[in-house]
Amino acid sequence: MIITKENRATRFSIRATAKQKELISRAAARQKQSISEFVLENSLEAAQGLEMDNGDFILSSDDYKAFLEMLNERPRSIPALRQLLLEPKSIDVPNT
Image (cartoon, rainbow, N blue to C red; front, side, top):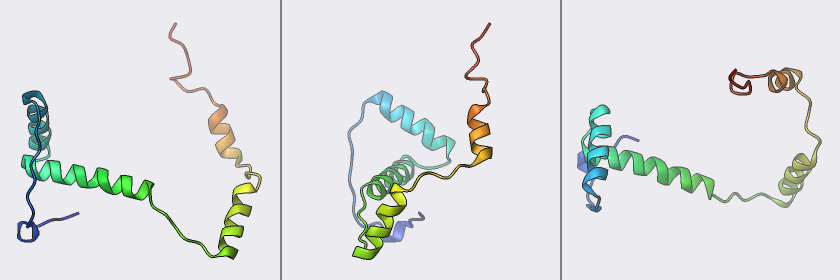
C-alpha cells in the first residue's frame, strides 16, 4: 500500500522501551524507511491480515448448500502430493 504524505491527516504515537525502539529503528533502516514509515506499513499489513482472517462472507441459500457439499466431499487423490509427503525430508532424518 502506497501512502503519500499529502493524505496523512491523523497522527498517533506509541510507547516503547529503548530496546524495542532500537530494534524497530534497525529494521526500518534495513528497509531504507523512516521509523514512522516502517511502523505504519507493517502495522497496516498486520491489521489487514487480521481483518481478512475475521471477514464474513454471505452466500445465498443455494450457494451455501453447494459450499457444504464441497466441504463434505471426499478429498481427491493427488499422486504427486502423496509421493511428496511420503518421501523423507532432511528434517525427518535424525542426525547420526
